[in-house]
Length: 315
Image (cartoon, rainbow, N blue to C red; front, side):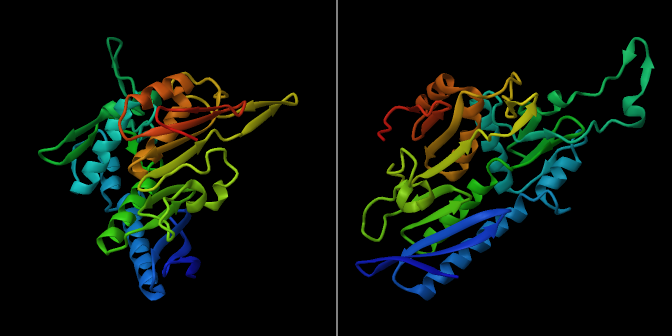
C-alpha cells in the first residue's frame, strides 16, 4: 500500500513497507505523481529481490553456492558483480583485522582418506573451525575472475552486508530512473539521497521516526547511509546472575563496554559492514580506526549511555 507522508511545494513523499530478504524494508521516493512513484517503488523492490537471489545460499546454481561447494577443491568463476562484492568484503576484513569476516565454518569436510592417519610420522589433522573462519583463506584472481576457498568445510555468506548492498542497488536503479530524492530503510538502516520535499536535508528523524528519541536523531544524513549495530542483550541466568552472551571475535571475552555503534558513510554496504566490527574492536580502537578513514564517521554509545563520536561529527 502506497503511503503519502508530506506535501510541500507540490512534492510529496510516497512510501511503501514490504518484507524483503527476511526483514522489513521501507522504500520512500519524493515526487508529485502517485502512479509513477508506485511504479518506481516496484522497480526498487525487483532489484532488491534480484540481489537476494544473487547472494542466496539456497539456489543450487548461485555463484555463492558453487563457491562453497568447491571449497578446498578448485576455483570458481563468478560474475563480475559477485567478484567485486567479495573483493570489497575482503578489503573490509583486512581493514578491521578480521573483525568483519564473510567466511564461516560449516563442518570439517574431512571424511574417509582425508581424515586417515598414515603413520606416526605422517598424521593428517583436519583444520579447526578457527582456521576455516579466516578471510585470508579466500583466494581471488581478478584476471580470471575466480574465487577459491582453500579449506574444505569453509563457506562464505553475506548476512552482515547483503541488506546494505541491496539498498545501494535499489537506490542506484531509482536514480537511473530519475528519482532525485528518497529514503530506503532496510531493517532500521537508512540510505538517503536528495532532500526532503521541503528542500531540507534528510535527518535520522525525518528518514525514520523510530529514531526520534535517540540523542543524535537530528544528525544530517542526506546522500549518506546510516547503519546501527546493537550489542544484543542476550543473557544466560546462572544462580540468578546475568551474563552477556555477546563475545568478541578475537578474545572470546564478554562485550560490555559498547551498547551500540552507528556508522555514517556514502554506501549502505560499507555502513552495514563496519558497524558490528567496531563493537568487537572497542571504543578507543574503533574511533582511531574510523578517524583514519575518509568519508566515514561513527557514533558510539557505551553501557553508561556516554556518547563518543569520530572527528567532524556534531550532534
